[in-house]
Image 1: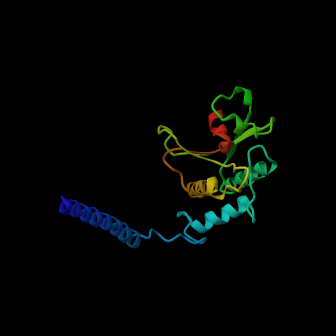
Image 2: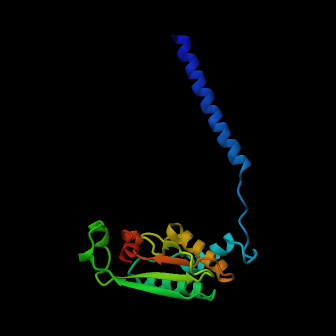
Image 3: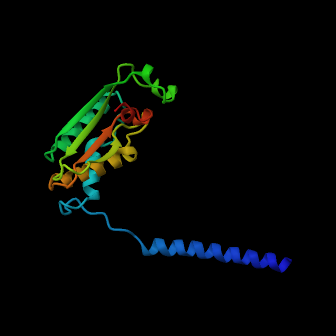
Length: 195
């Protein structure tokens, strides 16, 4: 009985070591593509361009931009300006927030919003060449939480979509592509639910 449990223990140890060895080999063998510099070809996404855009949107040092705040409105204006610089049209979808009509959000969270808050979603349309095809919708939120600038959540997604808008603005996709930047996500997906 003792030798069977020792053999089983050795097998488990060997399997565990092989598992971690295979992970180490995978990490060493695959490093992924190198981030492209700011002067990368126009038809390729550039990490350096995205970082530059993030700094332009958030400021240096980065500032928070919560739903219903002046900073949130300023962030949205900078976002609109950046997208319009590619020759694309933007459309705001403004929805007055009514806390009495909501039933899916934690009260403690939404009570942090000012009573006169207007949710400001932004829609960008890149027309496709084939109107018979259904459009594609790509979405993220543009607001930050109350205690940070939102560089990771969801600033990184915002600048990735901006970079995608920039690339598609130079060529017509087959399908119409809609980009939706919602407001109030940090308070419980308010802008997304309001549409």
